[in-house]
Length: 115
Ligand code: AMP
Image 1 (cartoon, rainbow, N blue to C red):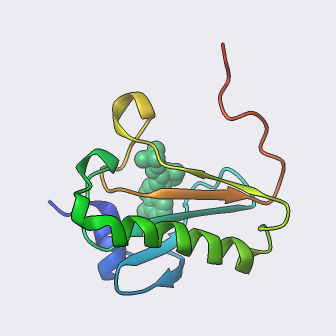
Image 2: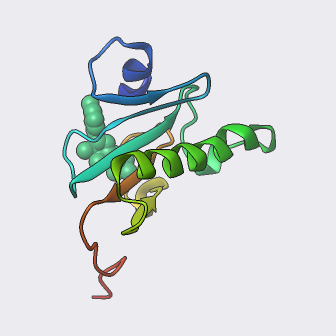
């Protein structure tokens, strides 16, 4: 079964796509946590960080470079932003297709509540 993100990558379901290249697609999160909230995903279906192979360093690295470029494009590079990759149940991963959240546009507060 293709993931919902694979269907966005292939164009089967609509999304607000802000970047697409041979390895990566990036689109706006449907339920944004901040003024900028973009998801950066590999075009290839990789379940999560734990499923990355050593041979996939290029796609993993490209995710960061796309995040850097999109942050500049969104005008949030100077103020700062947060990159989040949730992994597995304790990490709160809901969609089982590797993705990086690029979040910014306002002060984001502490990373985790310590309660
Ligand atoms: P995670 O909890 O890290 O797996 O994050 C999944 C994210 O995907 C959430 O922030 C959702 O709001 C977002 N999301 C789910 N479905 C869609 C969709 N069709 N288009 C854009 N974002 C989505």
